Length: 370
Ligand SMILES: *Cc1c(COP(=O)(O)O)cnc(C)c1O
Image (cartoon, rainbow, N blue to C red; front, top):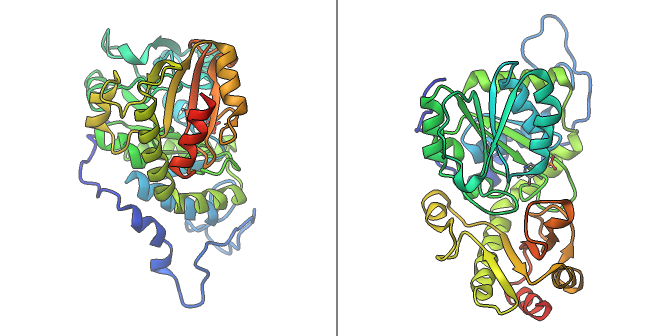
């Protein structure tokens, strides 16, 4: 693998909004059009222009331009986060290879690997995020990390892990769903491939499923693009357009969500109803030093543990400004007791995803609910 270039310009979030507008002809729509075509006008020899809807699509292109600006790297759009993760796996793993996964990350990533990669001859090992480096990375072809982990909010030192994996001859894939490229830039820290579920904060309105991959290694991007074209794992044009629209407000949403989460987490720190609190932005959090060194924002997810299942369910289901729902990262504050899906967490553990409500209004509702 080539060394990761460090010279990519850092994202200026305001530039995202003007990306399309800066190159428009007079009379062109400021918002991108939705192109649903399967066929494109193609007389004579193919020359790299759009030719068939499974290979390229102008609306994907508009959205990928924003994703690419966010990542500082070529990016490819997929119809879900799992489709993006599948592309990264199937483009990099072959029979006889070894894959390392976090034991406490997003459950579907582990299920995908166990169900479809193991029978094809990929050896899979798992480690807890909080102890991920223990044992080193020798012999692993692909190391997959998720930081902060979902739902536990433990963190991995991305630069240290990526450097060790590279020295051992492997590649690192980072799931950056929870912090987005505005909160953390894994490619700048030496990670080879970033994957993301854009269903969450990137889309932001709980009305679409999408995902993307990004990499500064042209061979890896080409392999994942080829996977998308041949497997047919392609996003719809409407979805791409909706995600484009969501990305235009990502900076303002993410900023509000993170700042509100910081305020609320600080106020929850000595709340008598909680037996445990996780938020990487709090100085007492086990992940705080790492988060401070690695992240531009501490995120919008708060992990809080209440005394038992009944108390946690009552909190989630009765607070008027909390939507009881799985998933996270939307503009509406939502919460879920993860043990209901069998995650290895306390029965009273609640993953609270802070939305864009006015902070004092939300705090009044949350504190009344507790
Ligand atoms: C939701 C999620 C995924 C899967 O994304 P989908 O869009 O639901 O396919 C992957 N990783 C993390 C961390 C997630 O939260």
